Structure formats: structure tokens, C-alpha cells
Image (tube, rainbow, N blue to C red; front, side, top):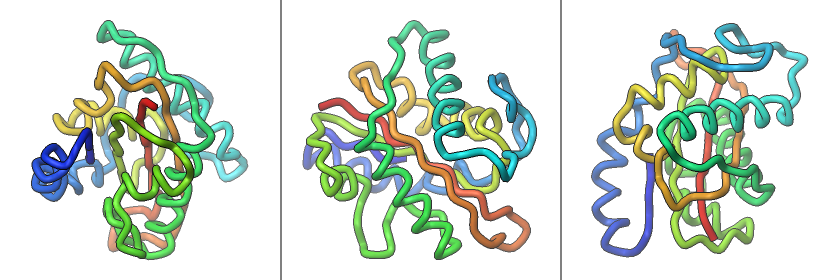
Amino acid sequence: MKLRTGFRAALACLGMALAIAACGSAGSAGGPGGGPAAGGAVPASYSIGQIRQQMLVAVNQYRTSQGLGALNLDPDLDSAAQAHAADMAARGVLSHTGSDGSSAGDRVLRVGYRYREYAENIAQGQASVAETVQSWIDSPGHRANMLLPAVADLGVGFAEGPPTGRVPGRFWVIVLGVR
């Protein structure tokens, strides 16, 4: 979980992000979802486009159930999220810090998204979009990110790598933002 609105918030969130970065790493929760993969493994034949659509539906279902507006997929945030998911999968490491030392904010700016506010949720091991979203709902910091009232855009990343110990090497990333 990372949220930044300014320098002071960045410093405050750094400690919080370090404390809950691994909150989304256990993938056994079930939950409501939609689409063909809800509750089951992500089929190898699924495209990233299908995964993005399922994630958008699941996050928006949760947001609207809490009285908030729906988000729109943003291609810039998709690029930032996908690059980070691929980077984590290649390294077999769940971290908000990229292999080049980048933060989520660095990656968002790198793809040309000039944000007023953003947040990043990451997870490892969950078998489906539904399990991933439920794990974020169950984590206070990640839930707060999904319920940020000002955000309007969503980017989604997913990549598979080798397992890390007994945790499957499926890496999930969402980046929420507002320009």
C-alpha cells in the first residue's frame, strides 16, 4: 500500500507502507467477484486485457457498494502497474520498490501520468481476481486505498514468475489515481 499526496504524506506513508507491504501476500481468501475466473485459478489462456476488465469490475463493485463512484481504466496507469508486476515476478519479490529503486510515484510519473493523488496495492499468490480483491478488502491499508474518494482512474498489472517458497509466483498490482 502506498499513497502520496505530498512530501509530508509521503514520509508518513513510507512507514505505513513498510509495515503493511506484505499484507496482500497470502492468497487464500475467497470473495465475491465476477467473470469466469472468480474464485478459481487464472486460466493460462486469459489475456491481460481480460484480467484488467475483471479487476475493474471487482474494484468498482466494492467501491459502489461503499457509496463511491466507479473508476475508469487508464492506459498510463496500466503501463505502470504492468511494468511493476513484471519486475516483481522476474525477481520473485513482493515490494513497492522497483528493481531500479523506483517508488510507485516514480513509475506513475515515468509513464506520463501527472497525478494529484495516487495509491498502489500489490499482492502475491492469489489464484484469482476475486481472491486478490478480497485480500485487499481484508487489509485496512489496502482497503483504504481502494476507497479513496478522489481517485478516478485504475491501472492493473499481473505477471507470473516462479513460486517463492510455498507461495505461487502470481503478482498482482493496481494503481489508483487522479490527475
